[in-house]
Length: 221
Image (cartoon, rainbow, N blue to C red; front, top):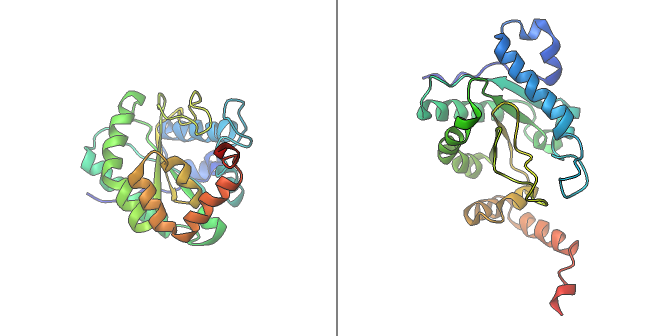
């Protein structure tokens, strides 16, 4: 099966008929729903987040740099190995798209939207696919995948009652791993090992800087 992926769309492209004219209306509606969620929720502060700043501190920079792309994919008639192949195609597409180093590279992201994937099926599909592709993609290329869908049980790091991973349409993001990802790996020893191996001495300094900002010294007495 081909690993061909669809064209990539910036958020502003979604209002241009010349760019989206060949999309099915349902696909365009799904992309617009995700784009609206990004611009009204993801890039804004939230009182339940547990920290200052936008829900995702990464996304405003991606939008400013015009390095966040959307792509629709229909997978209802594909089995898990075929979806794995599709996702690996986006891994390759991401590595070949846009800047490869510096801040622009760290702020690049492809959001693969699945208009025909129901929310109640999304968890199972994403779990099976990421079991195959997530670790190798990170170890070999430093690529991170993130699943979003309605009903996602994941919580914010600083408030376990807040669920920021619940999107109106299921999607996977594809981006480069950054040193700040350690916060997501603290309870996953294997992933923390992968992170430490990838960032080396910089990983140690990142954790030390976090400790310097915390009151851990005061608790020693």
